Length: 112
Length: 115
Image (cartoon, rainbow over all chains, first blue to last red; front, top):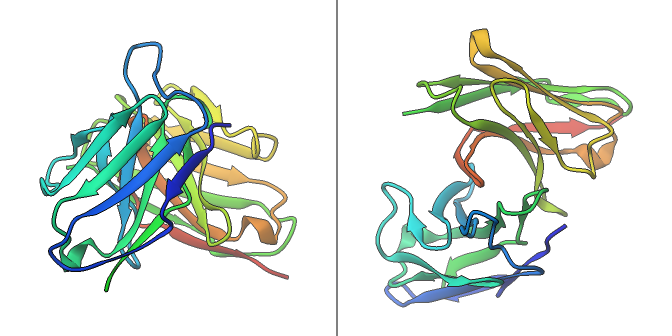
């Protein structure tokens, strides 16, 4: 299985400041069709996960543009340009290139 | 806007069979794969498997021997069965629409296995 490794696992941030989460995969996530199926999810307390980003950098409809994704191959980053109170929760990366799909351990974002 | 609503037994005894169903509202059932994912405090999020409208499936090898995912096209529903459950299967189970990454999730069902 592809191992997804996130860092940090805990991220205290100040409101209005940027935040960055790293995700590394144990093998390349480039699929035979040329796409890289790397997703980012947000899970607020008590809620189901919600997909924010797909194929590295594409925002889902309704996702604020302060969220952005980047990377390639085996290294990826989720950035929040200015953290707001509603961004508190756990963020997961997930690969959809190699079966079985696998998730990172999660990064807990909290306000300082 | 697609919505997923899931249900099933929340308390099981060891060796019993977990059974959950997910109904899809809002169309597009025949276009996508549909998936089950579970979440535990210890192992985090774990992909269980997926199915499409014609019954084609993919399973996580770690659970494959105990898992069956089925589909009912007439009702726009899909189901999960997990046999011989143990305490390790205690988790929140989610159904979701699959797009090489779930893009729409059900509300989740807490399943607890305890004698």
